[in-house]
Structure formats: C-alpha cells, structure tokens
Length: 554
Image 1 (spheres, rainbow, N blue to C red):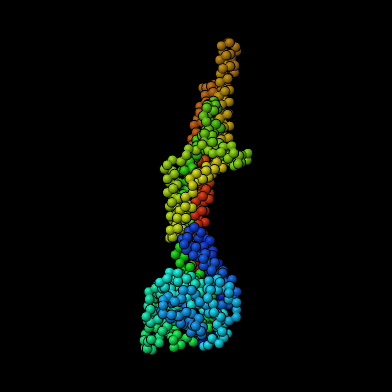
Image 2: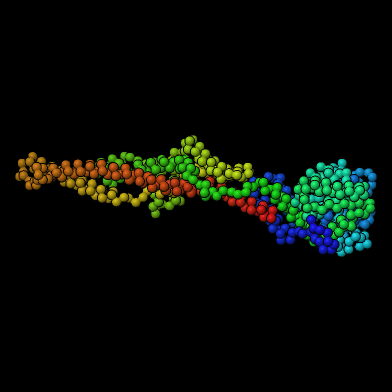
C-alpha cells in the first residue's frame, strides 16, 4: 500500500498494455483448454473477460470506490462525511441501505459508467463539499455506498455482491464489535487476497474506544488480515461522528484517483485471480510423445493388420516363384495348379510397379482378404494404446488425461481401414534375384541335354529295331554319350532343383524380413497419424494453455 503523501502518492497499477496482455493470456487459455476446463470455471473466465472489455470501454478516467460493510458499521454515515452532506439515508432501523448510492466528483460525464454499474441514486458533489482535499484531487471519483453484505434481506446482499464485482477500489468498513466477523474475512477479504493494492480497511466508530484500545483493535485486525493472506493493506481508524480519520481516508481516495490506474489494477487482479484458480487445471509440464513412442504399438497394430499372415504369404510366394524360375523344367507345369498366396489375400497387385497406383489398388481391390484380427490381437491394440496414453498423460489433471486417452484410442473401424490401406499400398515384391536367371538357364541346358540324350537313344533303338547300319555313338569312359546326356541331365537337373529349393528358403526368409520392414514402416505411419499425432496435439494444446495461464498470471 502506498504511503500517504498528499497530492503525490498514486496506486501503483497496471498499464493498459499489461492489462491487455493478461486478458489475452486468459482468453487464449480458455480457447486452448476447450472442453478440458471445468464449465463453471470457463464460464467465470468468460465473464471476467467481458467485464474487462466493458470496463475499459467506458469513457472518462473515473475511479469507482465502494464502501462495503456489515450492518451497523456506520458506512453510510462515513459516506456522508466524505461527501460532505446527508446523501445516504441513516436510521436506527436495519437494514437502512437497500440500493447503492453514488457520490460523483468532477465534471466528467459519468452516466454511462453508472448505468453499467446499475446505480440509480446519484449525487454530484460540489467543490465546497470536497473539504479535506483539493477539489481537483477527487475529480473523477465515484464513491458508492453499498447495501450491507450481511443484510437479512437476500436482495440487499445480492445487490452488494453484484456491485462489488464491478468496482475499482474496495473500502471495507468495520467497527470494534464486528472487525473479526467470519463473514467479512472468509467470504470477502480472504477471497480477494490478490487485491491488496486496491483495498483499504477502515475501523469505524473508534470514538467509542480509548487510544490504547484503538491501537489494540488495529493490531488485531492487521493480524486477522495477514491470516487472510492480505498483508499490505492500510487500516485507517475513523469516526463519522467526530470526523477523526475522515480527512485521511479522503486523501487516500484522492491518491487512488490520482493514478487513474485503479480500474486496470482491479481488472488485472481479477484476471490473475481467475488464472490462479484455473492453474490447478493444468500440469507444470508435459511429456514429449516423440520420446515415448516405442515398438509396442507398432507390434500390436502389425498383428491386428495381419502382417505375419502377409509376410508368410510373401515367403511362400517367393518360394513358388523361385521354383517357377529354377525348378526342374519337366515338373514346372504342376505349379499352375497352385494358387498364388498373395492372390488369395487379394494383394497380388500391390507390387509397387509403375503400372499400378495406390488409387488403382483401392478402386479395384477395395480391401484385402486378410483374415480379420483375432480377439487377442484387438485386445493387444487396446492395451498398447492404453499404455501409451497412460505414459503420455502422466502427471496431467484428470480432464487432460481423459483427453489423451481418447486421442490414443481411435474408433476401431477407422483404424482397421487405415491398417488395411497401409498393407494395400505397400509393395510386396522386389527385383528378381540374379541367381534365378543363372540357375534357370542351367536348368534349361540340363533339360535340353536330357532331351537330346533321350532322342539320341530313341534313334539308336529305332535303328537297331529296323536293322539299319549302326549310328556312330561317342563314348565317355564306359558310357555312351546319349546315356550320359540323358542321365546326367536328369540327375543334375534334380540336384540343381534341390539346391534351388534350399536357396529359395533362404531367399524367402530374406524377402519376408524386407517386406516385414516395409509393412512395419507403413503401420508405423498409421500409428503416427491415428494415435501418436492426436495425442501430441492434446499435449501441445496443454502446453499452450499452461503458457497462456502463466501470461495471465504475470
């Protein structure tokens, strides 16, 4: 609280830019937080933002000060003493004040402001009445005498609380009998601990006490205020009957008017208090989802997408193709009776070749014929998603944790479609290995040798049967060349086919591993798009909300 130095002391308040920054921070926090806010808090924050806009839109540099107190505290008498005339009604019957009364200093138009405040009873204070302070020192002051905040009439209490929400400076008027009243401290003073720079406490009716008793009451009142969290508030002893302390209070009001910043200070405190209340709705930090992503989700999605089935089909397809290129030529025709494993899964077109695009695959094939995921596979996806959501939401409040969990669990149908498309658009074939060509050529040569040997032997047998002259027959050791060609071609062809089958097994495993990596990469993209990215968006919103609240609290 500023010391009282006549004509110079001002309330050290916020600039218009500072208030605007705080209000923007609160507004952004409400927007970024969205449904993760308690609706009551969000509505209250919106009300404060509306009030900031409406109050700062008022013309003139008025400072609105409210005298608030309990029944019998003498605030109406104190109001008349400050105004310098019998403006507020005073009487023995309680409650006396039922509607606010305004005392207005200066020539600035105040009708719009008072209409906004909802104050109908208005009194223009003349220069002669402004005793105790120079007239221009109080110019712009709007002093309100409010109904008792502990009135037996509900309407009176509600009216007092309504106006208190709108004023710039609070003057809490109490007396030696009620200064420790729980309603004053618990419902008002303690709730406004961020408002000490725009708060004055008046201990009225001190004419009933000795000076020593006054000091004791003030010390005890300051102790209670400190317990409320309000440690820098000035307590002014007054007596409306004798005039004690009235000039000091009037000068304190002049100080508030001099800065022309009380309205912004009070509004800034409103924003800060609201941000403080909302701060418990966000955590102090959030995790980086990029560091949380592990293989569990991709493993679970791969099983659900049927990747093991596809990889097995790729391996079997590779072995069949290997036999078609390198198998014994005399039995290759039998392959035509065996359907392609990839064709059975309606994946035979997903070879990544230039003639087939992803759009063609989707249009022609629609969906694959991969068996649907088993209940165990679906449960694995749910479990992995839930675990990822739990890790990503560690330390977040419940509403944010629920949002993360929802983002980590996309609808099953949509996820299944995306997984199927990922498999469809993944090339499942690769360039034919060189050994296919080499062994295939050798098999053709061996087959030709066997055919030549067989034909040669047939011709030799026919010539003998027809008793024709013997055909020349070269020999290799003890065996005739036709026999060597036939038997060697057959035996070596079968041996080469066996070697090719062994090599096909190795190649199938390598091809399966390569395709498995391709499929897992495609599945990883689905996991990123459908699970990780949505969770990251929630955490980014949380970070923006937290930073916006910190800006509002600045």
